[in-house]
Each structure stands twice: as C-alpha cells, then as structure tokens.
Image: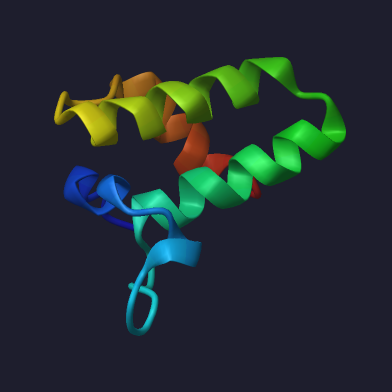
Length: 73
C-alpha cells in the first residue's frame, strides 16, 4: 500500500464518489475507529496526528503512517 498524504483531506463518509482503494485517509479513519473500540490509545493518538497532518497540509510522521499501514497485519 502506498501512502498518499493528499488523500487525508477528506473523511471517507464525506467523499462524493467511489472510495480510493488503499487511501491513507480511509485507513487512518478505519484504524481510528478500531483502535478507539479496543482502547488502544497509542494508535488513536497516531491516527489523530496522521489525520491532522492531512487536514493542515503538513507531512505526517513516518512512524505514524507506518502504524496506520500495518495496524491490521
């Protein structure tokens, strides 16, 4: 899965049209929901930083992106 930070600007539920497969935004929101349900505060914080970085146009930390990418592996 390649990480495209520009995809973070729109939450999947707000998107008009089909979801982009492999989008880091989709992954971050999915992981955030799962991590919240599991009480995984480290992952929740990482997801929030990734989402915030996308919304503000900053690059996300590579360790946070890696956590999002590998969360369900």
